[in-house]
Image (cartoon, each protein chain N blue to C red):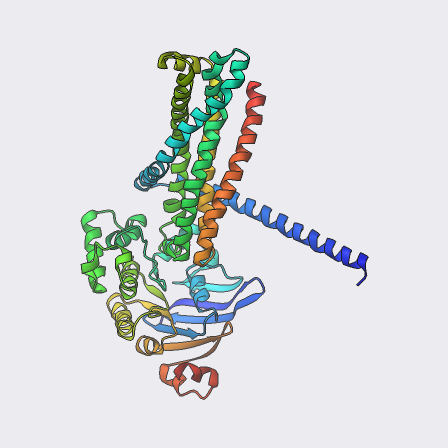
Length: 271
Length: 242
């Protein structure tokens, strides 16, 4: 085969690979959307699995609270320490509490908490459901008509949807406490004055969109973990792959939702 | 005798791999059929098609006179309560105790929500499989044979008319295998069930089945009683009896 023939063959192979990748990607997007629709439908089917929902909510909170506490505190501390020199240069250090509060509430708090939850919760759900799939527990529920989509998936997705916003608010609060400690290192500011300055700079246009997007973060963290676990093919190796894939996909989806949320907020509030 | 399962011209492929090729099968009330065949011959796929876990490409499956192709999800769930399925490893829910494993299908399918009634049902089926003492144990504390017994108890609690056994004696020692085979017969007698038993274990097939069917490369290759197949001169059939 001459040089140009080989080149055209390589080009064809490359195009075929892209075609297959695109097909796989859109197939998976379609499957996730169908899975999401089925999950949402299960939210409204009675009887409600309130015991399992509470159990899952407890596990999610229990699993992530220490991590979020430490990360939130350090986040506020570091953000303040790094921003202060620039503000001091302009003589605007008094704006520090307000500026950090806006950064935390609008962006850093929700995204960082959601990413931590993706790493901790989504992977956990992916691995748990993957193991249940491999050991045929999900099939056993299916054949005994006990609706695993309702008992296993819907409860976990609803728990993450409701819990992630709470965890984000908690992370924001801890972050602000971290900020207070960092400010106190340099300036003798009282806790009341600090929080007055922080909350004065926050408006509903900061709080509402930021809170709404966290429900979407929570929904997709639970959904993607459940989807990846539910679709695990047989074999213990695939359980690990499902957990890993759940973290990667959920993190990617968090950034996409955040991007969309920023665009929508800009359009609605001109921020 | 009334047919409880009728399968006509069932085909199933995974990609280019044809697993089932034109399968026909009739299971009559009170009958036990053992399906024999090598690994990957499509035995498990066949019973997964019967409970709708796998959707066949073409063909017709009638269970208790209901055509699976005509059923919506709710109707399929209703039918599934009449068809028990014993998984190879028991498939017990590992986050629940034995008691919770048994209560789970009863409460979720609304068979009963009365605590005393559910307790009685749990005790009755556990007694049937001889494991009443393990009621508060976690699945991780049970042996392979015990897991299968609990799996069977969980199947029985919904009082199925048909039970599908997926390799019920695989991975068990000869004594426990014999006990499970005895249990299959005991269950049939007590609960008046009809069964399809997927197995490699010829002792189990001999002890439990009225009819044996050999599946080779996705098709039924031979069928008959244990003695008829044992004395067959066909090498493919003989191989299972050596």
